[in-house]
Length: 241
Length: 241
Image (cartoon, rainbow over all chains, first blue to last red):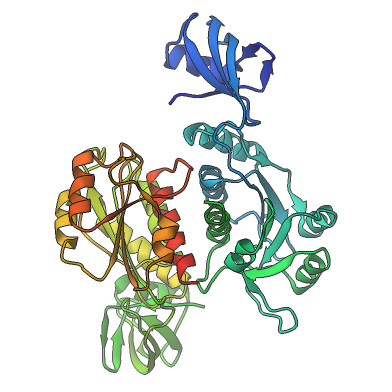
């Protein structure tokens, strides 16, 4: 199913940007009168009829709207340290969107190797993935913040299940299994922190625990950052399957 | 942890091939007398001492062996249709190995777009992934066979949980949830078939059912072939976590 994406939908008119219009008219050869389906990135699918088929700015009238199109019943926020290799993070973003994610926060830890992050590129990948997987909501990707800043931001987030995955064991606060924590959670909002290759530091872990994060492990396998992140996404998906 | 890979280990001598030797001596600068750890690809980790540091053919004496190193308790065979884009299958193979998989069979379906498959390249990726994720067993990757041939091969495989994931619904044989099937399974051997972008055909599905495969869905999300495959790998992983 062919989908377009527009942030410019007001009530009953929809406008496609230059990229989307070019694709619509020059590649897919749509013309005025054709019906197209447009996602607004926030969960609504609009069925529209093209009124102006300019390859630089398609305009269409909205015939009908459907909210929560392709939505999942939970809200998942993945806070994942940028990977040394950008491809890997892009791969994670694409697959996380296919399976189900609502928000992605790149977090820079003490042991992070990569401190630069191409948010724009990830946004493009998420729009593509949302269209391909038939979801009208495009996951939000945030600008990078430090791990400490992220933890601070989440401190007041009371109703959510907040999990931090790291590889070391602290005998005072043994890690629970991510599956066990998800199975025991009755709510719908989940936040998961995934560290860099060098893991979170003890100080970062302590801060997280103080802010209400539960330390978890992701099973016995030793997973790369992006694999760990996607494994957590799958775990949440299966919790609500 | 640095690991080497060798298929040439007999009792107490180990030999590295040219690539591994070059890496060992020229890149990592090992010399005679150094201790190295070598996986045999079949589950055993051998701790060895280098006796000959030739960059074309390192030789080492085996000091000790540990079987089942990095092993998981179940046996998972993923039969996945080759993807149009090779990168995607390579990503799947790498991540499946990290999480846990024992055998990968590329299967060519009626609706498959790609009929050529680079087994050698996937083998290299699996060796790399096994080393990186600290597993002494390198998943086996088979030469491509047709879906029908694969189903025939599996017909006699009685004790295993055999699952086939497809997107259509047949009111006579409703699909079960992959999670439900895994949770209800007491054994340790699992075989999962994942179809191409165009899905398995009704005829292929029927043949699979006759051979004892249970039809499953992977939840509500619409997943690419490689994402569906990895989601099934994660589901098995969480079943035995």
